[in-house]
Length: 157
Image (cartoon, rainbow, N blue to C red; front, side, top):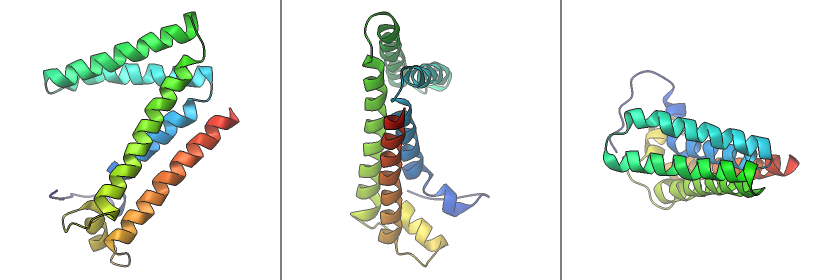
């Protein structure tokens, strides 16, 4: 991990991968609570997957994007034509999977071990008041809090 930055607030840029993944997971969990919101987020996902086909670097990415777009589209159809609430569970699965992966990735890369070239160490160099493991714990707690908030919002729908 060779970190080089040009411009921007580095303290906000460095955790973008860990916290950004947790935000996406939390949003999917939030929108899984209602039929319309689950359909909206699933339709948006399908649209973004199809747009990303223009930028897919190889055949594997094209097949993965097409596969997820087709599977999610089938679940949208099933939700509205055959059986409900299947799409809610699919969107919840996507959100929980992404959110749990963000939490586990943060734990593995920043809390469990400290590497001099890690994102937590780069953040420590920008703001030396927190040790790298402390930075990782803060990111991990934020990721867990985002998932809890997502579940709470989904339950309120």
